[in-house]
Image 1 (cartoon, rainbow, N blue to C red):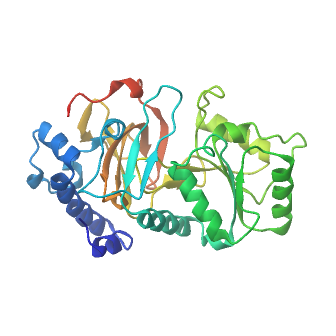
Image 2: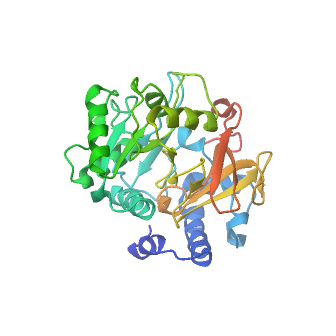
Image 3: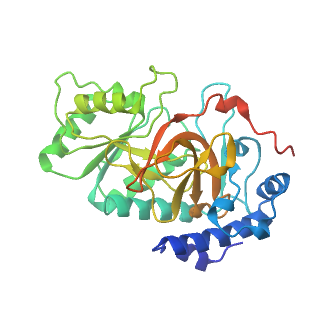
Length: 329
C-alpha cells in the first residue's frame, strides 16, 4: 500500500512543513483504502478530497479498535496487539502489518530521547503484562532488553530482594539503567530501608487497574520520588492503537518524536481544535501508523504546553460505555 520511500520520509522529518505534507499524503490514502475510516468520513459527510490542512482531518474515535479491524489495505498481520483491560471490559486490537516498522519507531524514539539502547540496562516491572503474549509494551521491552547486551536486563514479576540488590549494584557502577513499571507495582515496591537510587531512571507507564485508589499525577510522582530517593519520575505515554510513544522526563510533560503530533479538540465538538494551554480531549497523529489509522481521537484529556510538550490530566467520563453511534457495520 505504501512504499519504502514513505517509511523513510516518516523517520527523517525535520520540520512542521514536512510533517504536514506527509500527514496529508497518508490521510488521502487511508481515507480511500481504509474501509472503516472511509465509512466514518462518509458518515460525517466530509469530502476527503477537500482536506487541505491538518485541522480539517477527521480523527477516528479510538473505540473503533474495539469493534472493527482498522487496517489500510488488505494484509496478513505479523502481530495482533491487544489492550489490557479488567474482567468483562472489551479490549482493542491493533493489527500490525510489519513489526519492523514498530521496532524502527520505538528504537529511533528511544535514541532521540535517551541515547543508544546498548548503553542501558533495562529492568521491567510489569507483573500484569507478563502472562500476555499480545502486548505491544512487552514486545517493545523484549527488543530493548535484547539490544542492551546486558545479561542483567530482564523482566521481573515482583520487586524482590534480587531486583533491589541489582538496583544497588547498578547505582554503584554508575551504569545507565531504567526501571520501567506499571504504577501499582512501583507503588508497592518494598523499600523499607529508604535506599536512594539516584542513578536510576524510574519510568511509570500508568496502570492501576483497581489495585489502588486513583491518584493525581503530582501526588503519584511525589510518592514515587520519596520511595526511590530520586529527584524526578519519568513517564511513558503509549497505547495499543499506536506505533509510537511520547516520553516525559519531568513534571508529566510529554514530548513526541518528529513523526507524531498532538492536537487538542473541544470534547463536545470533535472538529473544533483548541489553542495552546487550553484543556480538551487529545487527538494523536502517528505517521508510523500508516498501515492502520494515523489519525486517532483518544479518550484522554490534556493540553499542549507553551514549550511544545503536552500534559495528560485524566480521561473522559464513561469512555468504556460511550461508544460511537456514527457508524454501524
